[in-house]
Amino acid sequence: MREVISIHVGQAGVQIGNACWELYTLEHGLGADGRIIDGAQSAHDSGFSTFFSETGSGKYVPRSIYVDLEPGAIDDVKTGTYRSLFHPETMISGKEDAANNYARGHYTVGKELIDPVMDKVRRLADNCTGLQGFFVFHSFGGGTGSGFGALLLERLSTDYGKKSKLEFCVYPAPQLSSSVVEPYNSVLTTHTTLEHSDCSFMVDNEAIYDICKKSLNVAHPSFTNLNRLIAQVVSSITASLRFDGSLNVDLNEFQTNLVPFPRIHFPLATFAPLLSAEKVTHEQNSVLDMTYSCFEQGNQMVKCDPKEGKYMACCLLYRGDVGPKEAQAAVASIKTKKTIQFVDWCPTGFKLGICNEPAANVPGGDLAKTSRSLCMLSNTTAISNAWSRLDYKFDLLYSKRAFVTGTLVRVWKKVNSQKLVRISPLSKRTTRKSEPIPPMLKTRPNTKRASENRG
Image (tube, rainbow, N blue to C red; front, side):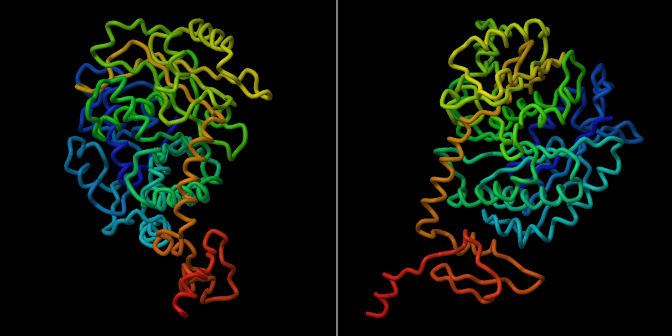
């Protein structure tokens, strides 16, 4: 058995989870209540137990936990179409949200909820015979996703240090923003989780909006459209864990093949073919065409130009009607392209995975049904552009000390169970001289304002 536990944190994590489990049930022939649909065969596959556990009554229950500091998103799941699929005890919600504040999600409100969550994680882990690791779905910009997500990964690293921990993160988009303090939350959660996550697959809403509009002809994409596209990528990444194939990829192989150095663990995800129902009959969709498409900027899940960087590693995950010879021929053709460059110390850099089970499609969804598909995971230096944008936004805010009182001050928290150290946003004074002020919280006194007050 190769079980994986999925943990969905915050509104973004919960809504992406809904789309993922909707797709998993279709792929494995399950109904919305977790029971096998008449005539479905895939439910008895050997890899079925990776994401589902079977009850004594023959019902299949997801190995998942839903967590949010406020009840709204989880209440929607409890009253939605798939309310009978999930175990009620794995739906954990608080009464007070994090208010887009990393510190509330990590140190105050979130800290009260972490022990019940870890207790549920332990129960799910005890029911596994060969736990491989964890998938954590969350956003970088939200208070719960950033703060509580970081706290959760810290605890998972402490309690399950040898297990793989993979993140699926919603990264702040270049032009779209759900919160003014997104840069603060994103920098803080990235810094906290850098040592605790083995691999982080990032997506940003703007890139997926563009895919929905330009490639899938969706005039006004909703979060449902976005999440279903993300679910297809997640399904492709996990397909070899759940189905048989000629070249299967294990969970540990992602880290082995994609992460050259522990801290450089942010692969770029790309998907092909991105075809609507109107276009699919006019496209050839060969293995070579799909492979070339995955190296184009328009198929990426994060806004950055791959031509501005070099590849360190590349993992090609094929699904459906694809043979090993076709895949190897496509890779050989890619290597001849001068526009696709690898770093000097990693000249080959390709890992292939082939899953025989084709991708399923949600009825009425945006993506057309195809016989084959490809998800490419690449560790490229071009992703540094995304981090540079984030750093620039952080510096703009922090240079004016904007929103520092509500966000960064609370990060400097309890020491040895004593009272919270208070730091004035306009001075270096602190209530406890023995404790050094973190560099991130140090502020320069506003001498101009002080002189005006004296005058």
